[in-house]
Length: 229
Image 1 (cartoon, helix red, strand yellow):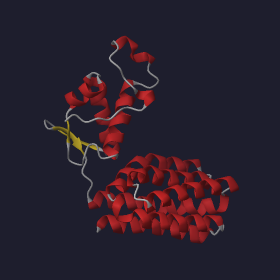
Image 2 (cartoon, helix red, strand yellow; image 1 turned 135 degrees about the vertical axis):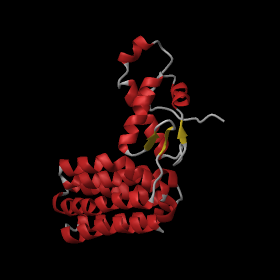
Image 3 (cartoon, one colour; image 1 turned 60 degrees about the horizontal axis):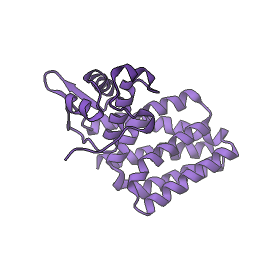
Image 4 (tube, one colour; image 1 turned 180 degrees about the vertical axis):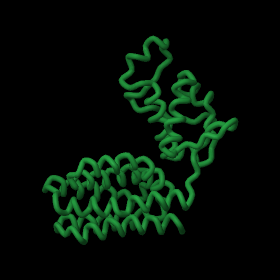
């Protein structure tokens, strides 16, 4: 049975002649890249599954060039592995790979929480609590498909409250990989993860920078331990 998934509205590609490609809001390669990345993150394509260039090109009604370029871009991002004479497949997450990601994230998230506690505005706190409420409710009600996006929104909102654009940009570049790893283990920590988020927000609300940093780092360490189990 053919897979059913779509590009977002701004990425919709129809069967018009190639001369209309320049009129697209984003380059064709970017449209295919974004759609493929989303399909990998949400589990449409599973770790280790082959990604056949011709099939993907036909699915999107595009030529093989933007498809090939998108696959190479995803290999740089870590989502795809390309083997000579064997083609592309979805990358396989392993303990070492995930461990390296968590090693990078723990100090970053701790710093984000510390700075957010020091710099957050009342509006930042309102937004953090709104996202926290949405995530906690989704976890409690078993709406697991909503949690990866809400988890990303929580951490990026915390980064915005930290008021450091370089730090926020660093986390943004990791956000898709983080979301992929989170989705792979989501059922294990759905409620506990949002309890940890609540502890971070409480420290940020109290402007307790040291406690916020500790809670932020502990949250990532707990996620790492759950992934290894």
